[in-house]
Structures are given as C-alpha cells and as structure tokens.
Amino acid sequence: MEHIFFAFWWLIFPISGFIFGGFGMWLNYRRHRDHMDLLKSYADKGKEPPPEVLKAAAGGDPMNDPYDYGGYGYYGRRRWRRGAYWEWRRVFLFGALAAGFGYAGWVDNFFSPGSTHAFQLVSVIMAVMFAGSLMFAILASTWRNDSK
Image (cartoon, rainbow, N blue to C red):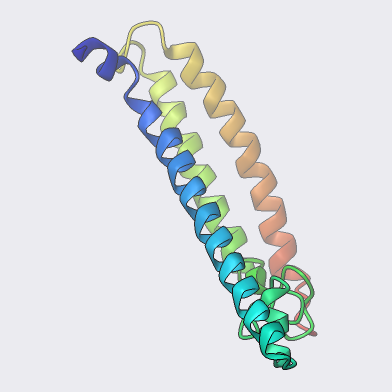
C-alpha cells in the first residue's frame, strides 16, 4: 500500500481539483435553486419581482455583472490580468523554469539517472514559452490600450 502512495502521490492534485470543481458546481446549483424559489414566492403572491432579483436569477450578480463592467464586455472582470505587469510576470516565470530545467538537464545524473533528455526537452519548451512571453510583454508595454 505504501508503494502505491509513493508512486501516485501526484494524483492528489487532480482529484482535489475534481472535488473542488464538483463542490463549486453544487454551490452554483443551490444558488440557482434559491433564486428560482424566490421568484416562485413572488409569483405566488402575485407581485412583480424587482429588477435586481430578475437580473440575479438570470445568472448575473447585480454587483459584479460580467456583461456590464464599465463597458469592457464579457471579460471585464478579468481585465486587470491583461496588463503589462502580468505579461512581464510570465516572462520571469518561464525564464526561471527554462533556466532551472536547463541546469537539471546539464548536470548529468544529479536528480535521477537517465532523466537528462527529459529535462533538456522541458527546458527547450520553457525557452520557447519564454521567448513568446517576452514578445508579448514588449508589445504590451509598448502599445498599451488604456482608452477604456
């Protein structure tokens, strides 16, 4: 039993992702069901629900509506991730990963015997990601669109 855990320890992460995803979907279902119960109570009383309740029941939060966030459209809530800062953050991330895997591929048999080629392959992939991120970071820093 101990061997199985040490061989497949990494399965903890995807399984916990599935569990958290299922829990999030269950919470979304409960929220939608509660909205429908609220609309049903308004219909039973013969009253018209307020527009905020209708908007929330339609799937949008009136305080944080993704379709009307300062005119930025559907991805307006995540607009703060689309700046030059986040592009440069990816440059440093992929640069560090490329350097780390490159070092691991250069030092023969230090981590595990026979893993040199795998580390070199991952290093090349991370270097390509670094080059692409560098290009996007330079473009994001040079031609920014702050009109909205």
